[in-house]
Image (cartoon, rainbow, N blue to C red; front, side):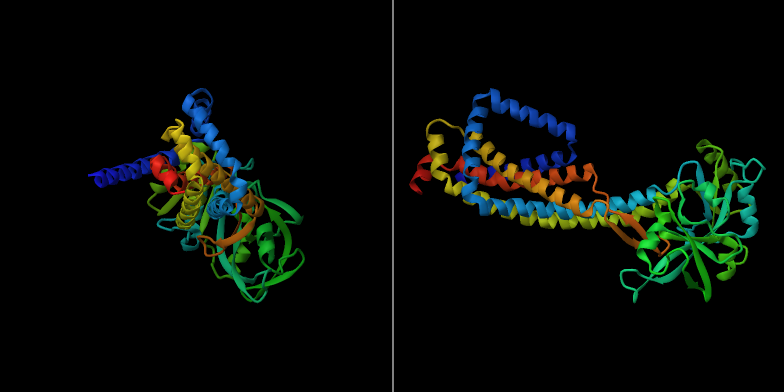
Length: 440
């Protein structure tokens, strides 16, 4: 019967722990702050709280004698937080780069059913209809602010290893492309001239690929092209090379077709009118999105994969860190068994013992979380990387170690500390005083 009751007690403890962890993952920073204040008030103004504080002080004062074992907890949890935050920062950085591309007052039109520009084809007649649709802004001389565009992929040698080629996206654009994307700024050189085989390169592509410096020539589709300018946009266009659409189309034998048409709307509210007119036109079969929505959707798949991989790796590492914390704290409690038994013999109850061991473990976990987050921020925040985008070309992006991700890492660290410290703490509180004293 005693063993059965003990089993039920342990089972209840596991269920309670699962509930606490589930609630913990959903708590906001403000809610955690409120809990911390309540804990401090309990420690200061209640008798058992003051007892907890006394036991905790003794435990923390002996950390120096257990420096090696304590370091295992700190470094193990720092590793978990570091890997988790780095992976999530990669996903957030990629999503942020594509989310920054586009706006609510510009729209992009693709052939119906096309997931990306690479799969889309719009004939000349379609382009004319799209540019004249209601809701499209006009220039002072009455021309629609619209750019029919072609996106092709070429192989260029990587700057990091000139023997290895990678895909780069070449975008053929109309003159209106500069008006549609006012964030695109020429940093060096000049814009390309229509009708000439000239290119301007994004600063991200310039960092990734060799031979794209202003003034140099590259060979595309058997023809020489001159790089005449470098631009920055702060979004996914940084990874592209821009040229005149008609010239790109003739080079790659695309005729008068395009793959997408991007237009400026008279206002964000005009999007519904614009979309309804195109979708309801029997001459067209197209998909219409705001450019913000279009580029955000391009990042969804890869961002989810990165987050799933990051959390999976984090969970696996966290299990290892929990076992490290359990081992260390069981050893610490065993070493302090006489001290804990003596405290209980003179009137200290189980709650102060449990909470004091938990506080000690979570303090070490907090140190590990802060260390892991700081090192990750130091190394990866703003780190530039590239990956294949939806058009099978390299998209250059920066890791984004945001305060929200650092907070997520701290919550993981404290959760590991809670699990790692709970069972040694409960064991210390349950061990009969006479048994604890006899074992020494």
